Amino acid sequence: MSMIQSSVGRKIFMAVTGVMLLAFVGVHLLGNSSVFFGADAINAYAQKLHSLGPIVWIFRLVMLFLFVTHIIFGIQLTLENSAATPEKNIQIKRLRTGFAAQTMIISGLVLLAFVVYHLLHFTVRIPGMGVYEMNPATHMVNVYTMVIMGFKQAFTVLLYVVGMIFLALHVSHGFQSFFQTLGLNNDKSLPVFGALSKLVSVVLLFGYISIPLLIIFGLVK
Ligand code: HEM
Image (cartoon, rainbow, N blue to C red; front, top):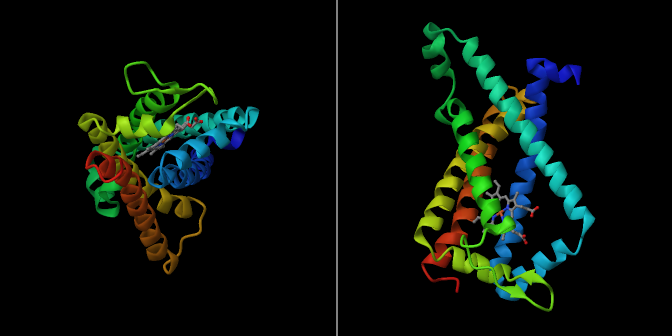
């Protein structure tokens, strides 16, 4: 724990937790894509996950720990950096970094708001936020109906698209930063990791927004 008290330790911890959260986001996109294969596919996928019982709860607790520590250390690092950056150096800093890098705290906090909204919508299922049809045989919600009906609302689709733009912005710098923090970057690998980061963020952006957009435009029914 003492390592985490130093700012280098916190950066390493953020890089590792960030890449684990990114792995979840990638796997979640693959799972969500089952919506394109129809009601049976996504409902069977959801049922399989829920049937894992206690493993689901262990997984959720680990995810919560990763998410909360990543956010706390992110806020701490931002505060430390701004305290250590006198006004006169701001121009120098801007020249060295891009828009995504400078707005990590903003994109991160928007993502936090998105995840809270998303969990209330699809996991906690607050009555009135969506259509939650129970299957009496499995005692499970019809995930297909919930997703399709959810994305028939223009405002919900807008919130998801905006959320995904911030996700892509955050990942486009965050993933690259992971290699930098772990000291894996050199003159040759820097452009490769930079391009890889952009590619991953574009795949996530188009992959995720395709779900609400194809539904609202009636291409997935
Ligand atoms: C179009 C975009 C998305 C769709 C359609 C979608 C769909 C879903 C659905 C249906 C569930 C509930 C699964 C169930 O209870 O059976 C869920 C849960 C969840 N989603 Fe998403 N999701 C999207 C984007 C995201 C993104 C971008 C993130 C993270 C940044 C995310 C994080 C989560 C988390 C943490 C859960 C809770 C998992 C659990 O129950 O333990 N989702 N999502």
